[in-house]
Amino acid sequence: MAAATLNLNVVDKRMLSASEAASYCGLAAKHFKAICPVQTVKMAGRFELYDKRDLDQWIDTEKAGVADASQAAILGRLA
Picture 1 (cartoon, helix red, strand yellow):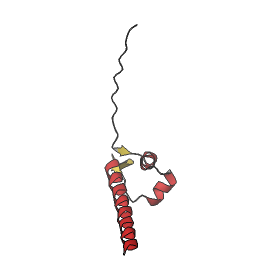
Picture 2 (tube, rainbow, N blue to C red):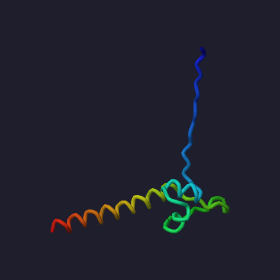
Picture 3 (tube, rainbow, N blue to C red):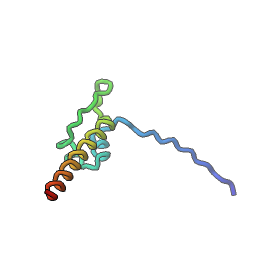
Picture 4 (cartoon, helix red, strand yellow):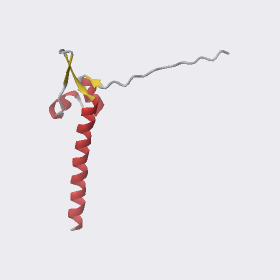
């Protein structure tokens, strides 16, 4: 029996369409557009895409706010 080798190269996209960005953030497209403050980048004057790094930064900021609120709530209960 002959063995076969399959070589795949997967390129992770940095710039995402609105629907891809919504999916990346785990949100429905209509909710994403309503709450996402990230500005699009105009590529070649025609395409407006979201930079994955900007989305990550927004998500990290949202997480930090939740962590701060949680810590404040815990400290409030201890006082």
